[in-house]
Figure 1 (cartoon, rainbow, N blue to C red):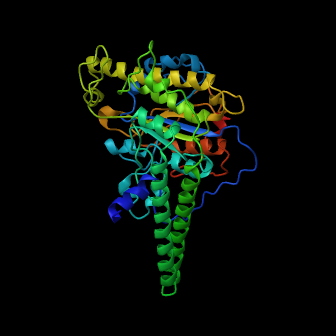
Figure 2 (figure 1 turned 30 degrees about the horizontal axis):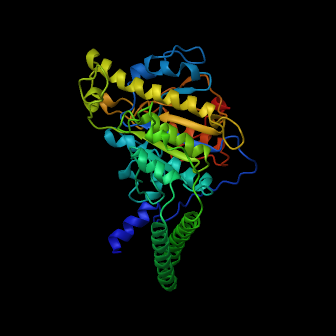
Figure 3 (figure 1 turned 45 degrees about the horizontal axis):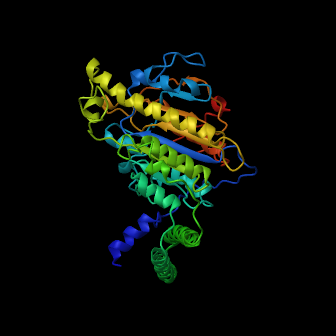
Length: 421
């Protein structure tokens, strides 16, 4: 395998060499947390603010148009107005900053700043599962500690196969060979860096030690992948993607959204992963719904035209309808402790883009539920000039709910524990 393919393989299995963060966020959990899992559902072009944000605050708010499908879940749901990432500007790139609050251009000197919430959680609560994180649908929101935007899987058949179908012996043997070769590469790198260390200044030696720490982390990841190769996968009914004589399953987007949600619930129930992201794509596709005559991207630039807003509402209502169905599924599906999955899973819906019509990254459409978080309210924060409350304050509360003893994440300034219990 040549060097380019080897690099692609390393990236494909989710390992990269990078300096570790200087500001440690190590967690020391002294008790078992109520919440054990995290799911993020993201829309690429945000949600139309006029249809998403309630006018009233508190628990007696009137559900706006786009949230009406979530009526049956409102007692568990927390909706927020005026959350955003203070350091992020506008444009389509802001969609990629949802889970880290940092733009690529601002992290050139320190790529580790791009580490996203889901990948940080994968390091902390995903180590004991077959898949530290499962990245589904459209990509862009998951970033490794090396500052690499991570790929996603959008084909339900491929996802089902990866989760539940055993690889043939030849493929298993080839994967073991690749992992062994990569371990050898790391051994060579370690040997070279040790010989280099004696000729470096103290500052450079500290940087080199950080680099070696990253290599040791890669070694651990490769070892875990090797250990999982021969562990049998759980079994699942292929009807979720194949259908049966009475039910046809459409695996084309957007009709496969419900299938993706079913796969997510199955993966959580089988303890295959504790961390999932699912992205709805952008683009200018023509959604195959009655009443849609313009491409999706064109509709997001509606300029408040009633006809375009009406069509955009059809698409965005579909998003919340499907999300409501996912919450139904998590409520009725039991985990290994016979609890509803929603009780032990923090679920977030959001976007790194606020108002797509103006490419604004302000006032992001965000709501959370599950995992023992207090719900039932709409919270509105005051804006200070251009900025609202840092979205990463919410992330600190989510991290703490998941048992991580940390008071900072990315651009956070505090937490929202007083609102979420």
